[in-house]
Image (cartoon, rainbow, N blue to C red; front, top):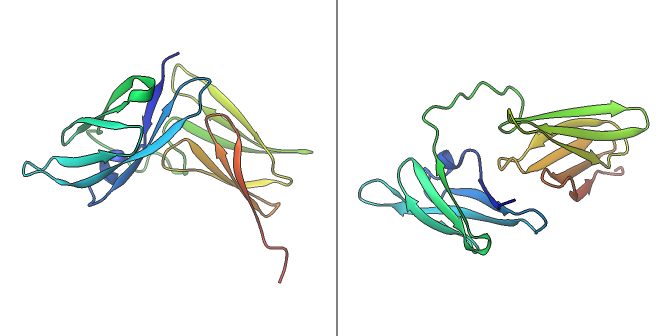
Length: 175
């Protein structure tokens, strides 16, 4: 399977701002994911953004509506196109594109099941680790990271790619 380049879902909006930044990742099966970002440094006289990439990524052609990004280490390039129209009220919950988060409260097991399902693909990740019920789940803007909060006074940050818990923040013990 070939490597995949991903970019923050609202990259075109983020890069409209002065010094705006959008997150990138280059994922290849069986290898560590490379994370980085692109940052707007300014505008040309034609109004085209001047974009710089972090280490490990290269910015190719940039227009007002597209950006070509490469990851030379994995020999992959992707042209990302800005949307023609966005519909801000489609998702009433804080979920990223093609994603639904279901917080299940099962007796004896506290978990989050994520179903990432574009029409022809189905990915399921089981995130286990909360001691008590899970109260809320939110995706980070990248769509690759999930934040969960539970009755155990813990916040957990998860990788949506491999279901690993990256860090756990423990709540107050009193006082």
